[in-house]
Length: 302
Length: 227
Ligand SMILES: Nc1ncnc2c1ncn2[C@@H]1O[C@H](COP(=O)(O)OP(=O)(O)OP(=O)(O)O)[C@@H](O)[C@H]1O
Ligand SMILES: [Mg+2]
Image (cartoon, rainbow over all chains, first blue to last red; front, side, top):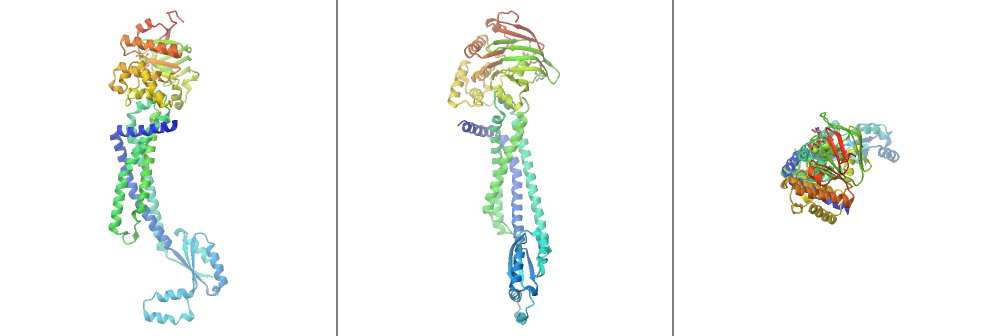
């Protein structure tokens, strides 16, 4: 009961605080607005990159060709088991030399050529093969070596160096985006801290009087924290609205494609997650900003 | 109740506000502190309140070594004492009622009990009609009385008042002192009052401690004999 009453009082005081220093509250939340806008744009970019990278990664596969002297069932079973035991492999698909032959022949458009190839069906030059999917493109080299070492494997091929490099670049871009988001959050905390510090500086006497009539630090802090959280929430509204609008517009305009190569992530539910994240960042930033500044003023006098 | 032993206080700018002060005040006593301006009276109160720390010596109040209190524990200690500050220290954004209520909220007084008590003390100091005024809408004397109401609201064991009648006319001053005498008698509250007002001291004789340039120059028991 007592805790609840106290809680209600702090919330009320927090709202009153925002109202009484409305100008200050607006300028604090616009500091949040600007940084969250950047954070939001970066989030949209990095998330789309993440998804693009994943789809490229999942298309990376290795073909392992079986030697002609290991084509009996026992060998194939053993090789399958050994392949599945390798870490980092997400799928192993068997494709017989007949499948391979058909695939090759059918991939030719030319009717005459297909007929010509058919002569070789009896004396099939293809190998039995395993198509191996990977969890993570960075494992490509090590997995390749391991597969080569399996007895009965003739040779190993992969999608090529290029996809591998692209994946590496995208991973770096993503990392850079993440670091930038973090840096921007810190900047937002600093901005909020600074603006709230100014609001509170005009109230440092108030804080001191509260202490002198027996209010503990936590009790004094609470309404300021509520105020900080409200400011953070207020600051996240504009970026959420703006980014949601722009993203949906862009998605429709580009019909989900970017440079013909990447697919954009559909607005729902992505934008809901983004709204949640931006709000959460706003709340945390507002909370920390006011926490740091109140603590500073609490210590000014005894 | 209050025991100060060889306490000295020099401010950062080098002013020696108090030099080697010692004094004992027993529970239930009513004491005046007098002295010319700048003699260290407010500094003495700040030592008792925990706002300033003595450079040397000991300040004990109700069993607490005030100078050694941790910063975070100072507010808890202050709940034992009611202080009327020379500059009132009312919260500017709260009404008279809310100012008194705040001191009771911090100790979690139940709401109806709180309302009743706030009205009661505002009436005792005769500012009930100004309950909903903000400090900047009150005269100096009215603010002073709200500060007194706030100090007595929680029925503290010790009441310390820096010039509680400084802004009041003789009639109001007399009323306030009578009120404090009544609290002293009925609640057994230990009372310490800083005053310049010789009429009060004459009409309501009590023990009187005189400060000058940071030294105790006299400690007169009620009636005037040196104690
Ligand atoms: N915060 C401070 N910093 C520096 N010097 C101070 C401070 N507070 C008080 N002093 C000095 O300490 C001395 C004692 O001040 P104090 O306020 O205790 O006097 P007082 O007896 O209360 O005077 P008054 O009757 O005018 O209120 C004065 O010389 C004053 O200038
Ligand atoms: Mg003074």
